[in-house]
Length: 361
Image 1 (cartoon, one colour):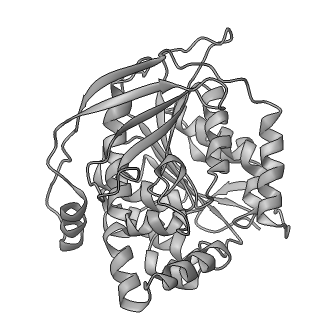
Image 2: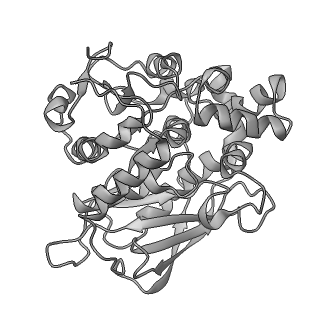
């Protein structure tokens, strides 16, 4: 069934929040009050690469080393703990350079933290990170330790008054991608994290960052992208609604034409998408999305080499996708938890969602 609606995006977000709030449990400490762990960066495997891939890796990678991970319980805040560590590519601004993850812990029926797989989530453009908060709660309720990375400029990485967080995230795009790579190693040293791959999920703006990070560090498994794409410059120039707003905010900072293209180029996922495993990567797109245009999602799918079973479609636009978020969250969790998941079964889990190279009619 195709969903057709024209709703105010903020109103939709508030409705989704109410839907999820009914099922939300109170916060608990994720097994620690406050504790420090030692972690080590995992080197990125570099193979024979194109000039574009080499350029991205050279801009984003750093000399691997040891780093400290601090985990602090946050009872009553809606998530279980904050995980902090230093960004491997500092900008020189103290608060922006301290990476923050919100930890939503997987628990048993008695509310005790359990050993379970982990997923790193990268949030949307929305400043309050509301959508990723709701997705994270859903994932945790389905047995996944879920970590929401605050992009530069967001949450506790605030860049000061008068600066829209999305602008900071894009101006610090290299840092955002590097933070994802280091976050994987930070998660691996925490208690109750099941040995094995860390999954990576990104939505909208976060999908661009996640796709780039997943293309660089190929140990993420699986990679699940929601209403996102590639070809950043064309997406920025042709996208409507939130994209148009962000385009204007960047223009006021002097990022137009060539300057805008140069800003977005280093972190455009299409350049490293060929390093993603097309059998372990899923792209879920909205048929009527004008915020992330069809050409953008097509460009990413083509660059990854996705077949029609890994390219899934919702009969929505960018914002009415939120009305289907509970079912979509369940479907994404199924993909992450079930190694034998076959996307052709997705319509049974996600209403309005179908596999195939063309949107459902």
